[in-house]
Each structure stands twice: as C-alpha cells, then as structure tokens.
Image (cartoon, rainbow, N blue to C red; front, top):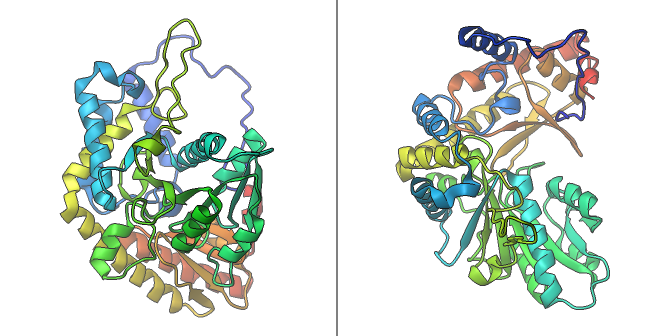
Amino acid sequence: MGYFGTEKEIIFDKPVLPEKKTDIETVKNRIKELDHMDVDQIRGHVIFYATLAMGDSSITEVSRFAYSTFMEKNMVMKEFAPGLQRIEQEVKQMAREMIGLNNQTRVKLTEGGSESLFCSINSAYQWSKIHKKGIEKPEIVVPYTMHAAVSKWCHYTDFTLKRVPVRSDYRADVKAMEKAITKNTIYIAGSAPCWPYGLYDPIEEIAELAVKNNIWMHVDACLGGYQAPFIEKASGKKFPAWRIGQVPGVLSMSADIHKHGYAAKPLSSIFYRDKDILQYHVYNPSDWPDGKYSSESLLGSFPASSVASAWAVMNHLGVEGYLELAHRTLRVREKYINGINAIKGLKAWDTDIGVLLFETEDMDTMAVLSGLIQERCYAIPCYQPMRIKIALDPVSDAVVENFLETLERVVKGVKAGTITSEFLTRFM
C-alpha cells in the first residue's frame, strides 16, 4: 500500500520469471532502467529521500560501503560474529551519547519507528500485569497527533485506543488526557515532536500524569530524537524537556536512526530507563524443538547492513559533522520559510523541528498539492487542518530552489484555473 492508501496492481499476461539465467550486465541495466523511472533526489526529496543529508556525497559513500559489506549477515546470529557484536554495541553507545542519555539507559534496535512503538506498548502491557491490578481490557491514551502505528497495534491486539483531541496550539491537552484515563489504562504517550505538525507535546506534564496514575509513559521521538540535540547546540534554542532519564516518569522512548542519524533504512531504536524496565521488553521463547530463540525486538531476522551503515555514518560524522548538518538544516528552514512566504497566497507555519507546513489562502490546497505531484516535485498532505508538508533536512540548495520554483509556478496555475486537484485523485 502507498502513502495515500492506493497500490497499482499490474496484470501480467505472461510469466515474469525467466526460464533461463540472465547475465549480470543485463540485470544491472534493467535495474538502472527501473530506477530511472522513479523521481530523482532533487524533486523527490520528501517522498523518497526524506531525512537524507543530500549534498554530502561522503555520507552516502561510507553508508553504502558498510551496508554492502554486511548485507549478508543477520543480527539474530550476532553471537557468532564478534565484529558485528562490536558494531552493534558501539552504535548503541553512540546513540546514547548523541541524544545525551546516561549509561543506565538501555537500548534495543528495531527496524523502524512503528516497531519501536509496538515494543513500547507491549512492554507497557507486560509491566502492567505486575504493577496494575484489575485490568479488564488494556487501554491506551494518547494525543490525537500520535503516530498511526499505535492504531495499527491496537487493531492487531484489540486493545482500546483513546485518541484525545489536542489544544488549540495543536499540542497534547494533558487535562483532557487525564479525563480519558480509567483503571484499564496501561499506556500514555507524547511526541517529541509529532509527525503531523512538527510540534512538541508537554512531555513533563504527561509524565507527571503517568506517575500520578501509575501508568507506563512513552515518548515518541522517532522524528526528532537524533536531530534535536544538535539543533539545540547549533541554534541555542531549547526544546521542551523530552529525554528519557531526564524527565521523571518516562519509562521508554523511541528515536529513528534512519532519520537524522542518517543511517540506511531500516533502523530505529527504543530506549528504556534502566535494566529493570528493560526486562519487560525482552522475550526469548524456547517452547519448540530448537530451544531459546533470542531476538533484539519483535522481528526475528534483522539486517546487519543497516546497523553497519549507522556505525559508519556515526563515525564518519562525529559530533562535528552532526553539528554541521544541524546548521545546514537551520539554513534550509530559513530558505523554505522565506521562499514560501514570498509567494502570494501562501503562509509557512512555525513548527518546532523535523517538518515544515504551509497553508494556502483563497485557493484550493489540494489543487496546489496535486500540481506539485503532477510536476513530480513531491510534498505530502496534512488533512486536519488542511496543510502541505515537507521534511526539514540538511538538503542541498538545489532541492530547496527546485521546490520553491515549482511551487510558485503551481500556485500561478491554480489561481489561473489551469491546475486543479484532479491529478491527485488517482492516488486517493
């Protein structure tokens, strides 16, 4: 399925698998042809290449080298690979250091933010079996802006999900969340920041609510976890408190390394406050013929390639490199905001970090988005309220300039009536 919930099904009128072997050069050439059918990095930044540090080819080079070197190895067999174990442990320690966490914090790696959220909810459920009594059916209380992965988990498990309306400033309404809590509530959470708006929830207030009601508290920092510490250093701006180990009551936190750690996908991380809390994450079944089956998180097979990519990029960049990328991100933000606000009929929103949204005045927002997509200059929608969204990453000037030039041209077309939302309907 695609981002808009559609998938084009191809009907094949003959077998696709060749009867005989195909020589390597032919396969390579076909791969290149298929790749060239897709949009390039400059126009396709938000959809395909978001959270890449475009403009720095050395990051791509070292990431691809590490990825290809370890692409045949599986993390589930890491005890037989001392080099791989060393890479994993160093990645986890560098992750702590990047975010600014103490060594009491425990880290597990996952294949994405959704899996990290799944792990946090399951850990809360296991914890609640011991620390809460009388639960009839587990409930989760989160802001309306919480990532859709929590809805997916509740669909799979039949947990009750309560999405609580946010305040007028689009941040979590803690008083409303408190009213939603019952004896069955096992998990509450906030975002740092949320994906829909790029805004921080009041994490400290939600954590106080968790302590007061004896509920597991999770912070979803998948979008900002590895970017915020360096943006803070580069700008001098302080975001609302959000780190595990620094906000009492927070028991788990997720952050995607394949976002602003700039590792190859898929790779995320979930942090637990300490060793005692980590135990609720771990499950090593042994009730089958082959004995104990121990994996890092929910999934079994786990690609070593993305972990190796993270190690390589983290070592290549170091603190200095990540700070440089943060400075570039701030410049990109300024260029986007100035450029968008300079186009009559558009206004940029003041988000915290991670994404940038803008609204249209006196014109059809979906028509503007449709025009951008028709030009293969991609952005994505936020429906409530209707806005257009782009990722805030340390991209090259060419990415920003191309987007702004295309956006200005599309707005003129929408105003003239030559561009409508019709093209977008094929994706809906």
